[in-house]
Image (cartoon, one colour):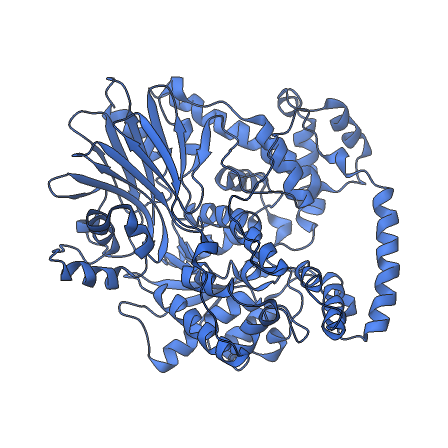
Amino acid sequence: MCGIVGIINFEEEEIKKNELIYFKNSLLHRGPDGSNYFINEESNVGFGHTRLSILDISTRSKQPFYYDNKRLVLTFNGEIYNFIEIKKELESFGYKFNTTGDTEVLLLAYDKWGSECQKKFNGMWAFAIWDQAKKKLFISRDRFGVKPLYYMLTKSRLYFASELKSFMYIKNQDIPDFNYSNFKYCSENIINGSYYLTEETFLKNVKELSPGCELNIYNHKNVKSRRWWSTIDNLVEVPKTYSEQKEKFFNIFKDACNLRMRSDVNIATSLSGGIDSSSIVSTINQIKKSNTFAINARNPYKTFILDYKSEKNNETDYARSVADFNKLDAEYVELDLGKINPEKIIQIIYHQEEVTGDDGIGPWYIYNSIKENGIKVSIDGHGGDELLGGYSGYPKIAMEECSIFELSRMFQLFKLHLQMNDNSLNNRNFIRVFIDKFYFRLKKKLKIQNSNSSQYNFLDIPSTNNNFDIKENINKLSKLNQALYIDYHYRAMQLNLKKYDKFSMAHGVECRFPFLDWKLATYLFSLPSKSKIGNGFTKRILRDVISDLLPQKVINRIQKKGFNPANELFNRTLKNFILKTISSNDFKNLGIWDKNKINKIINLGENLDFKKIFRNLQIFFLIKTFKEKAKNNCENK
């Protein structure tokens, strides 16, 4: 896992060594084990790389990596988990290897199959290959966007990098301004649930290469993008019976976990106590007991559990029960929200590079603890909710598929929907649940009518008009699978992947996600809804296959709170910091706020939802810290 940057000059101006090194060094946190750069003989193509050594930790696999006397040059961020199998195939064609890692396999696979090599890879990646003979740049991003890649076109250059902050380190006249309307779009739409992944970022002209897409640049001028992967076009035939579906699912899931244990360094697991991360650690534990490790797979060194001290939503007991049940070596990361330094919040905002309203404290401290234990890889549970219907809104969507002959399933789904949205209703009969929920919803509606949530959005600029349009035809999927498909590829999961990549790589830790295995994804999107939500639970098939591997209190959980506790951090610890920030002249005079709204909020004082104000602070500190980096750039050149 690494950081990558690159520059292509379309005109005669040379790429200077110092500017490429400065650009590359913006990502040293992603690659603390070494860095290097490449400039071709014409000085019109430059690659930079910062390395986190995971596979073949020797210097033989350092990057940029060359093949055939620098005819092909690679800079690569990610992991190709099935590199051993691909390597054997390439050896059958006569290819010789000098390393034991996946970097050389990737480059030689491109030499053999060209862009079709992408379809052979099971992994996560963002990479660029320069073909000196053809004068062609090829850039690829993995199927689901686990690894980030941003790029910018100017009149004379193309820049690309693993993170947005890197564009503050380029040639002074090319440093982009802020796309303020994108801040507005994210601030509004993430909160109201209408956020969709777009190519636009909060930096003008800096785009995010979409998941499953590639860029081809020919002769320094002709830039073409192409979607090389679409999950809907790769669905599979699933077994007819539920028993057979379970068997096949568990085999694919075990393989996904097994491949992600391939490493030449210590690895860990992150355990929240939810069904997804718990299923991963228990499945890995079963692989250990049966001694069926894949070649080069390494058993996790320990598992890391976040312990929010004195918080009502603390889920440590669930995670502890999983660790005890599987006899895991657990490291408990204690986090007291009353002792969080605001400077830490600013640091997290800078690295997160998103306006989400999410403080990020939990995962930040998990990955910091993993790093302090000398571990470089964490296997995490993200993606399960979007594949298996784990969020509270999915049972209601599944109800829409029910026919008039499926009244029993419809009532079951409705009860599950109510239970998932109000924990106090668990294990109560349907009529009682319905009556209580009716009054709950009525009071909630009256409360919403008497509140004004827009008062917390200070931005006084027009929003980006992002009319989302899925270019894939997913009509053949069930209503539930359509919703899951959109959340997996365009909404919730995409936001989570970007956050957790930045959180983990800020500490030089690589995250691996078994639920992001393409074989698992294509299989699960081919399954009927009843295999995912049924018998009173979401994630039905996952719960059923691991029911003997976990404590029943975890198997039978309906609700999960996740890393973020209630709003204690904002309404208690950060309250004064938030008020002081929005009262400052630096904040008010930024030129993008409605000052009347700010003054009204300040005058209200105590009776505020400080978490909703936090989105404005994310925007402010992103602009502030990015401007500081750009200013330092100018002073250092």
